[in-house]
Amino acid sequence: MRIYGDSISGNCLKVKWTADLLGRDYQWIETSVLAAETRTPDYLAMNPAGQVPIVVFADGRPLAQSNAIILHLAEGSALIPADAYDRAKMFEWLFWEQYSHEPYVAVARFQVHYLGKPASALEPKIVERGKGALKLLDDELAKRDWLVGDALTLADIALVAYTRVAEEGGFTLADYPAVVRWIARVEKALGL
Image (tube, rainbow, N blue to C red; front, side, top):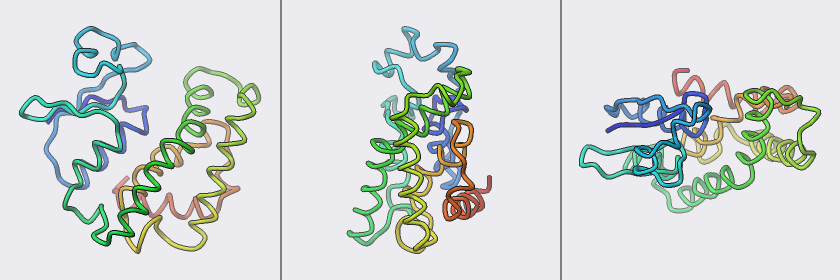
């Protein structure tokens, strides 16, 4: 299997971390978004959306979208809860991550850390919703060690990817102490 990913992307890193944790054999192909390597004709032939990550399996079939990829890789593993309700809660977090967390926390990070925009110049909606996402996480993690059940799941892997680097987008993680403790737990579980 080949994983095309950009090491600056949390969406790519969650695929790498899942593959590593599961002991999956793969070839990592560094694909820079900043250098427009996702816009070449060869890349667009694999993924017309021009996004990373993408996995190309040994039989040649491609699969895009980070959460779809980690779900496929983790099929049958303990990273996906066996209990139907817990599994649905994991999906709830995965959907929330892509809709209500990543568009704000990751976008702020990209604009500040990689494009050099001052945090004070970020669109107020991005900052407000990013803080709201971090607060929701903090409130939930004040009640439990993991997002779902009593062990690491794909929900934790998906959400830690950008949360752990939120300060690069101008957010102050110290304002979210339960999140800080959770990040340390997840990083330890992933061997980071």
